[in-house]
Length: 178
Image (cartoon, rainbow, N blue to C red):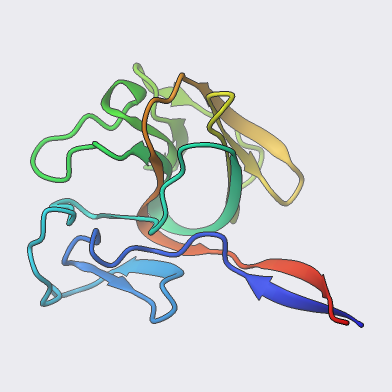
């Protein structure tokens, strides 16, 4: 018998979420909250409005789709040693490989910034990490249009990285039951 199950390749790590972020119970979506959550100020927690995925990657290929919404969002990956407190460098030099929507423009966080040509407003963004080849690619999963590819020789674990109102999309996986 063949069946279909849903699998979410990335879940959010509540221990890293800024106190003004609200995570869904299933840890697949985040939004900005009007009030500060009562959470401990642990070393993993960011003091600016972002959250990491719960699992880091130090080899192999990984892919996840993110439903993006609102006027500002950012999705990508960060290195494990990325600073959680104080001023940060959100660029590849600082250990961030990401794209964002800001003030109506789609941007790759390079240095200097790279404005992306997008034919229509993005509803979803696909993040594809090939750690061994040193690539992080972003595309529009509705038609597989490439957005941007970063190339870098990674030396430490990378974590999925999210800012703004986003939802990690489940994958439909076919399974055979005997």
